Image (cartoon, rainbow, N blue to C red; front, side, top):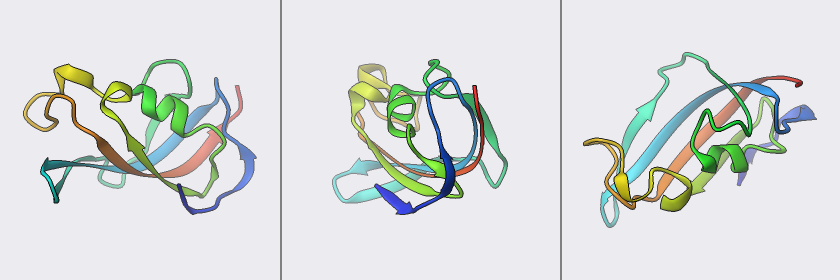
Length: 106
């Protein structure tokens, strides 16, 4: 879901992205908490190459620079049955607010 539409070229597989984000999950039904954010710093990765969870590799395709997208990532496209330490329970659905700061074409 695009919260804010960006401008310019759409992100595609193989592009290098720079993003700011916040990730949330529910500890219990109706009780959400932030498990991760990049505290204003940019996170860089190549889209579609497995450098991030599959939900991001799929969910950020087509996003444009300056845009903000809310991703609801089911467990099988996130950390699955293993979870991620104490912050993300096994089989957790994750919600991310991602702002695309830059797209470098492949």
